Length: 406
Image (cartoon, rainbow, N blue to C red; front, side):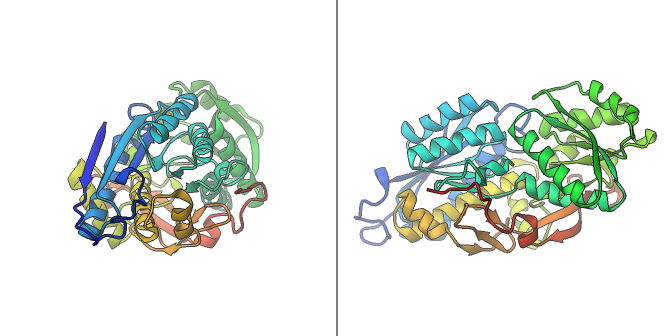
């Protein structure tokens, strides 16, 4: 589907790119490669496409006749959370559809595949939806940017806080693919650094709908865990939490910690069932006035509040377009020259900075808890801030030694 066919009126000699032929095909194409129908469709999916389209429209309004190109379009594709399909679709979007940059891409294994395609194609990729630290580690490259979050951020926030609050012994269940494997490693490091212990950990199939074998195992472990860490995401996490409640594990002395939580998950499970649950997030819609103002526009457009992936998609797309505007070209290397080292604040990032050495976007993160529904200002008001984690603490302070950009 081709949407946001945003024709930007240009008058002779007025725009930065007019007459220069510096925009390939006289058009910028943004590709949104996402899960349009599966377990991550709510947290990313069709609304990620909408977020990128919002960025295109806002860029058009801001620059008008002085825009670097006459036309911008957004194309989308459904990778179905399959890395092989993501690989194929990324190549198609870059080569056949002329995409200058790709965005979103939930599922870490799919994101790693797309990062490799971006590197080989010499085209940019802005990851907002996958959490693996490999994207800024062994798989880092000069064409891939990690814009929103990663497993280090999630574990450093929640694993540390819950352990320090008394969660000494942990049982972890994690989806058996790149995201889950990476997240359990980062959680174990954070837990042990805070003085806790992982008594057991089990990989679970992905995607999956019946976690009873793992949940029923928890109370019988020796020593009995104080905390069950559910490291799934999206639809799988919803199933874990519902079954956790069904088996009444809290009454058996096993508390719940969640590795990655979105408003869409809370909406599916019910805020009352999750009230008080700690989690770490990159952003939430009522964080402050700037976030709320943008989220109000998003809700008017889509009928629901945005997740942090949607906000990050808008931020990444808008900053990409502004970098093209400043560079006067869509040549990837020139656009990167503008982005690398850039410090910025927008509706998504506070104290944001694009680290040139590994293309990790560092920004403030947030330790939060699910709000008691009695305190909610509206049906989708799920999140209460516990603590701001400064940008220099939320992510690794230095690039991973394994990262080799060139």
